[in-house]
View 1: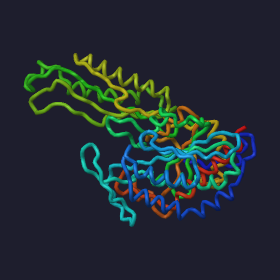
View 2: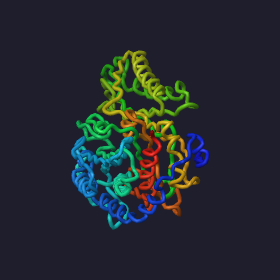
View 3: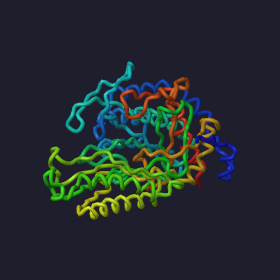
View 4: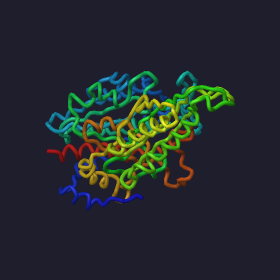
Length: 433
């Protein structure tokens, strides 16, 4: 259920008057630079690059940030770009993040600036598309950088603009994304006190901002289970230890990890099997079967419990069939819960209300999608938000999903994102002692 947040109540919740510092000025400047933000977005959309390959994207961003007079570093976590705005006055360090990578998706939307880019992904030629809105995220953060530079005299402390590669996951055999940026010290020197990020949403109306305190997006943990038995002729199954039947029982058993062991009134969880592979022909019972799937959780305690349950079910069911099950969990990557720090979320609610308007700020249920922004939030308090990108007159049933060839969001949705990033930064700086 969506719940509008009252600006007045939110102000009382933190016990201070809500700061309206430079809000009108930010709004006017956001109006003024909107055509430039749209131009940036169209450029990125027309020229997408895959994860860890955002070379031209990074050059374009770095060139612009240098034109603002910012201290710019490149090559962080392969292609990441980081710029620092120093107000010259003591105060906190605020991190603002945008992701840069496109997806191996061939665009079908009829736009003058549609992507025609091609690349190779896992050995296959594919189209490349900003099918999740990262083009808008970069443009919004560039717009916020321009506004904050213009308001430098009203800032305290420093702003660190983080343009992150490989949010969609690094190529096989490579490290990348927020996890690698953190490992390489992106939150240090200067040390970030709080970090803000946002994601455009194709199924939320333009002008709406959605938030949640605590877990807003799930932890993701892929897993692999290799069930090992004994091969035999399919006509003589009693001579085998059948890994196919064992795998089938394990898959059914996994469904009870959530339905019978997780307290779903407190936090949702998902255990999905996405791939089963084993055998070569109809009359041979194979030696082994491979199961691959994903686990999604919204609470660290539930995450631990589900992981234990998956291992226990797989190993014990296999043992009961005289087979063995080797569980690899996590398989090749793992994202923590995207967790909005409750104190920081409470502190910034008045900023959301003032920027978007009380009725346009909606509290939402968590989603079981995942975001590697969570790696930043593991180290420092952070807030992650959703902003609307759907035209208000477009029926929700016709709104395209993310990660599809039909994905589309409205340019007009970016203005709110620009204002939010700027106002969150200025308000946080002027509230923190």
